[in-house]
Image (cartoon, rainbow, N blue to C red):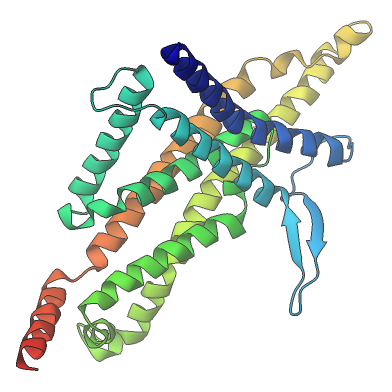
Length: 300
């Protein structure tokens, strides 16, 4: 009886976690249907603004990007909890094997690209990769992908830039400042621009690639619709209005722009995050600083 109750509770928890993965997307899809005005023809615009919060300096618009990002985060949370629910020392389910495979792959990426010192970054890198991938793939559901909003991607890039600067400063403030004047002082302005350009390039690369895919797919689909009506519009009634040429090609384009390109951009963003943080950390300066601090403590 106890095992039966335990299995029942486990199934109930699994169902709740699956709902946590699915319901956020259902909610934002319903919100889009209820709030999007009907329009004729092609429409390529930014994220829909649902409402605006008055602020002292500048009003804060709440857009589809923020709602969709929240849906992605909740869905990833549900997926993680589902994969790790009921884990045991010896794997006894396919989802635990999948969870361990993901952990092994992410740890391998960290070990190869950042080194053993940065193994604690595995959850952060996995989170960035999953957030980017799921955000781009949300376009398959007809949602506005958060990665097509510069504000969302720029926020990720700024967070990564803060981490990069943090690890550069671990070697000391003076070595960090001195690095701007190397190899000669005249290069200081260019080095400062290069430092600031890091988050800018990361955000524009990700944003531009995802947005361009959405725009191209929309333009091609609309062009095929017009071409279908022009060639086959002579057919009677509904048959002449059906966009026959939209069958096939938009789906093939979606495989590249929505799936392959979205996943590739998530991987590239995660790789750049790892490389920028790892290369920005001056281990020699850090060890020297720690040795000096230890010597001062012993002398005191």
